[in-house]
Length: 367
Image (cartoon, rainbow, N blue to C red):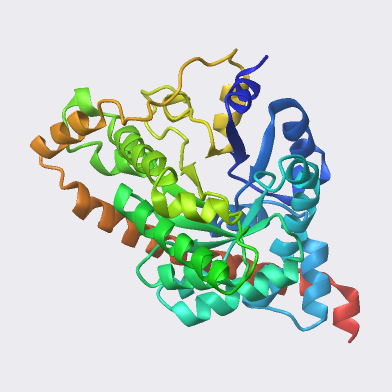
C-alpha cells in the first residue's frame, strides 16, 4: 500500500490541486485516480493561466471559439468547462460509489465578483447549469460579501466549494451560511442534500510569518490554525442544529485543507499532509506534493479531534507579536486580490492566444 492509498483508507479524500488539458489527454489524471486514489480536483485562475500559457493543447479550441466571435471571460469559461466536464466524467464512478460524498471537480466564479453578492449568485447558477454535471462544485470566496451568495446558492441547489478561508472564525461563518441555505430548503420542502466543502488555506500562514518568528515556531502556524478549525468542525457536526438537519436527510459540509504544498525548502514536502490526516476531510494538494507522497509507504497517525496543543502553539505566536485575527483578515484580503491579479493575467493570456491562433487560422483569415 502506498501513502495516498493509506490516507484514503483512513477516510481522507485526496484531491489534485491542478487541471490541464495535457493530463486529461495523456491519461495522467486517470492514472492518478487508479493508482494513487485521487478522488477529485480543484482549479483556480492561476492554474488555468499556467495551463493555457504553457501548452499548445488549447490552441485549436481557442481558434474555433475566436471564429465564433468569443473572447475574454466567455471564451475562458468555455475552455474551463471543457476540461472540467471531462474531469468530472472521470470522477463520476467515485461520485456514484460514495453516494455523492466524493468525486468532485471545482470551478471558480470570476474573482472580480468577490465583493458583489448578486453577481456571484447569478454566475454560480449559470456555470453550474452550463456544466450540467452533479459532481461539479462552484467555488465562491468566504468573504463577507460571499457569505450571502453561498447561502443563496445552496438554497438554489448548487454545490459549493467555499474558498479563501483562513481561520476557525472564517470556517464557522461559511458553515453557518451553508446551514442557513440547507434550513431554508427544509422549510421550503426541498431535498436538503446539497453538498459543499469549506476550504481552509494552510501554508500561506507560515509564509506570512516566516521572517517574523523564532526558528522553533517555523512551519507550525498553519498546522495549529487547522487543528483549531478541525476541533470546531467536529463540535459543529454534533451540535443540536446540525443533528436536526441530518434527520431531514442533509449531509455535513466537509472541511477541505487547501494550499498544502510546503513552501519552506528546509521543511519536509509532506509537512502538512502528515500533520493534517483526518477522516471526513479533503486534502487538495499540488502535483509535486502528490508525487512526493506517492514515494512513501503507509502514513501513521491522525490529527487530534480535540485540537491537540494548538492553543499553546497559537499563544506562543501571540507572544512573538503575531495577531492571529488581524493576519487572518489580511490573508483573506490578499488572497482575493491575488486571485484578481491571476484572473487579469489569465485574460491577457487568452487575448494573446486568441490573436495568435486567429492569425494562424486560415478559415478566419479568409472570412
